[in-house]
Length: 173
Image (tube, rainbow, N blue to C red; front, side, top):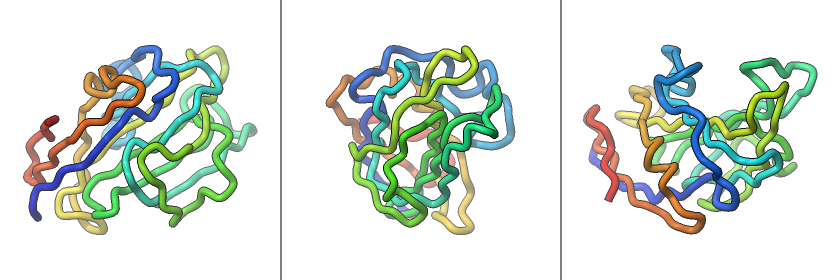
C-alpha cells in the first residue's frame, strides 16, 4: 500500500483545556490500540466533540447510563477514513446526534456529541488513532501517538499527517 496524507483537526475545537495523559501513560496500559494509544483530552463537561477527519462510522455503542463504570462510560464511536487505512476511537460522549449510526459519513468538523463526565473523574474526551497497514478489513492495526500534536492544535487549525503504511510513525507536515 502507498503512503497517504490525512487532514486532521482538533476534536475539541471550542474547549480543549489541556491533557490528562497520553499513550502508554496512566490507565492506557493494554494490548488494545484504542486503550494503549488513548489520548485523554481535557474539556469541560458538555463541550462539543467534533470529527477530527473525514470518516465513516464502523461501530457505535450509545450511552447507557446503567452500564457506566470508572473505566467505561458514555457513548463509544469507532470510525475509519474513507480509504480504510486509518481510524479513531472516541469515548466519554453523550448527546450523539440521533442520525449518527454505523455507516454514517462524517466530515472533519461534524458534531459527534459532547463530553460526558462520570463519578468525579475529570471531564475529558478519550480519543485514540490507528493506522491500518494494508487497509481494512484484514490490515494490521497499529496505534498512532499524536498526543502532543493534538494538544498543540488551535481552535480552528488543521494539520496534514502523512501515514507511511510501513510501520514507521506518521509525520506531521
